[in-house]
Image 1 (cartoon, helix red, strand yellow):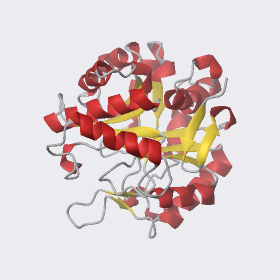
Image 2 (cartoon, helix red, strand yellow; image 1 turned 90 degrees about the vertical axis):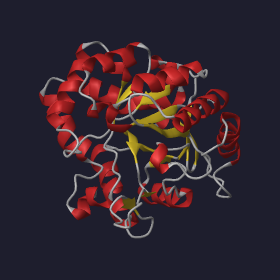
Image 3 (cartoon, helix red, strand yellow; image 1 turned 120 degrees about the vertical axis):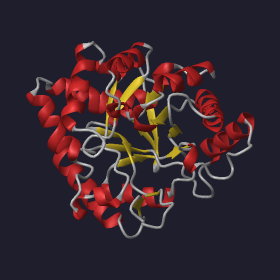
Image 4 (spheres, one colour; image 1 turned 120 degrees about the horizontal axis):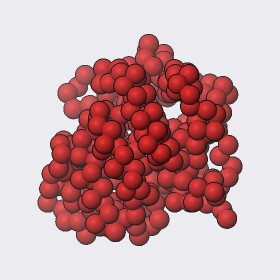
Length: 314
């Protein structure tokens, strides 16, 4: 049985993805609202550094694919993603959707769920703008606080409907890890199966019971800010990861670094996209996580999340 990812350069058979997949990254991004240009990955200024990092990770660790969750209003640039993928040999999955409310473009305010759904269906079916690049995932669909706001609820509902209608999966942004259970409730109520959902930033929430409940309900639990020490220590992340593995939910974990500022790049003294492979996974291995488990959580899980395939098919 063949399951395909939809990448910026076309369909890719999941069976051809032999190395790890970063489940939540940004390669091009603009979240600057203050003029300080820190929360930016510029398609020109920073592309050489990004290209260098990804090429090195492909060569050293077999990095095969990246789920790039920059969506509408976040400085998305499909052409730049296609260039980066071509230049590095790493497959890139582009996204559509809306981030959390402070970053909603004007198009969201006062727009009903039906119209928002149509916007997503149009991009998924016809490509982003005139680029011909079609999104392969819906995300990062944002909310903040324990309960999503009204506009965030409309976006979550529209995104779930578009995902269910098109067969794409959906990744969320749960600000500081909060509100994941409420997100999942809204998404499933709108008709999306839990196994097509990844709840984001759960490594920022030190609440193992929430992680277990999300996984038990069938959703993926994303520990996707690995290396962001100002938010959370990797020691805490590892404890939370091991707790979820020990609870029997290894098949529901996703990992990534969520590089979202140019200061995080290696060239600027940051941890880089490779922090997961160079620092965190060695610590996990030292704590008893074996090679098959690493392959499960860094390759088979993200492929299953993206395609909806069964475990044995990946």
